[in-house]
Length: 104
Ligand SMILES: N[C@@H](CCC(=O)N[C@@H](CS)C(=O)NCC(=O)O)C(=O)O
Image 1 (spheres, rainbow, N blue to C red):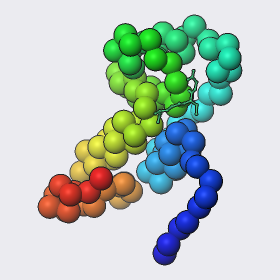
Image 2: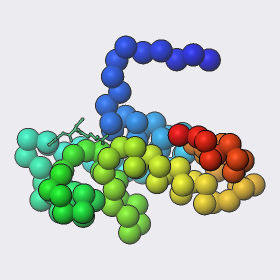
Image 3: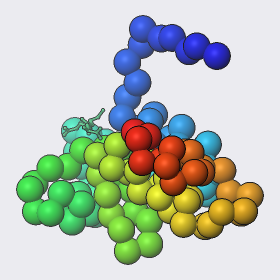
């Protein structure tokens, strides 16, 4: 089914959609981008490898702290795949390895 939109999707919405599609339990914290909390700045520093970048979305998942919405979606997709074939876990990627190799 074609889905067309003229409204640009915000980066956090990309992550939000992936979390919902994967049925991943999560908590959501809204921050003030004009007055970023120190804990957010600390995590952003970790996520950006010290590059001083502090944008949302930012995901904490276990030991991983990731910013950049596409990187977050990739991580969520891989985490879902790692639950293994045959699990009832929804995935973002085709289940067959050959199809996955060309999937973006
Ligand atoms: N390429 C990034 C863009 C993230 C981004 O620009 N987020 C904006 C909000 S939509 C932000 O955090 N702006 C605050 C800032 O740059 O200080 C991604 O896809 O995650």
